[in-house]
Image 1: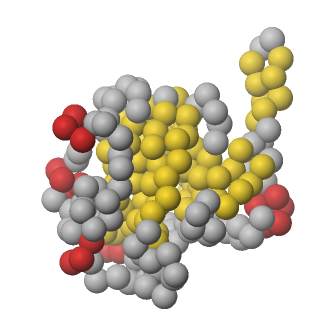
Image 2: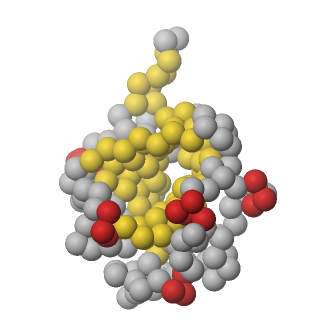
Image 3: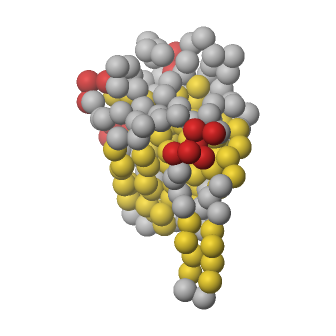
Length: 183
């Protein structure tokens, strides 16, 4: 398993080894010992599965505030996404900065997003399925979101800006500058 830090060092890309033969492949997608050795020490408590029928579906930018802040381990089961993590930790030297990566079923790459980050993704293909582990349970009273195209964050989602498919909730998310950061 290859685990590397992105430009925001607490966000990590994980590339599991794939063992292939004429039947397909086998891959170990999570190993607590390997993760701990790479500085990821989470007790994941919940697995989530997201399906997006349409290409250019954008989910995010979401967070869950303390006391139920969540770290996430995200991977794609079918299709492909651009995955984005925005540092919302006030005391962090990378506060307000973001990193992104392309995750797909084909490349098998995963991303670890620690708590204290906004998280979102854009589907690059129709019928995309995303699975992610979290280290705290969902709590509706702790959830929040920031609008995906906030100019302060200046996230380049690619050329699909006019075709983005959003939930009603995500379409009315707050701007970054109105966020009362809980981290």
